[in-house]
Image (cartoon, rainbow, N blue to C red; front, side, top):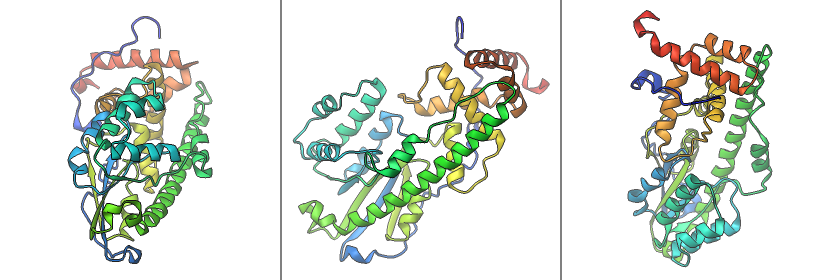
Length: 335
């Protein structure tokens, strides 16, 4: 976009614009079922904390829960044995956060800040560390990595683009549910060997497990409850979602994703490219809130018209900015 590409500051955010559809999903209470036989005399209590993978603040919010944790299971998609070993060395105090950061060589400042926050949480606490997510090069890991967002085509064939986004969302949700099944199996295997993971656990009758997981995996706790007596859920940050996250959450929970939501996913994608936003910042809630505020001002037909008349991303962004400016000039009562 030529010149100043900054969008004007919107009016104060409204709850209606920020409330994701399907917000009622994911109860936060504990539902006891029965004890897994293989755990013998130990009681395993699992605390699941949802996160968005986008902010160091989310990790900082774990500090209180971490104190009473015996086993910590961070969500690490595509992990390696070396990484797990280094996390345990970090927990034992044999490696410092700075040393591990240097080993990883992360360049992106937001990613580095997020990693540093996690490493400082773990460092020297002497907790057992485990990972149940898909490891690097696992066949399912490869399928998820290869499931790329479709190419966005502007012009008269926009309907095809919308269809490809729907298919991508369906495939993404299916893969994530497979990933949940894999993690469930790994958690079950892990609990059978908890006392062998850390000698300090051999004398404990009650073992507390803290697990972090993406906020879209709201079915996973219920899957765990079929095997464990105590499974609780918590969220560190307000649950405000990007449109893309909302669409995947709905699909994973078997809720129909309509074209109205899908076109907002597309607009969010193009707008984020134009603004060079990856939504990995120190304020992810504000990021999601603002982009929902921008896009929610447009109807399906208005967004569709932009996609059909734009020839490329830059022209679409220009049309979006012009439309946004026009809406700021029109009083709400006159619309």
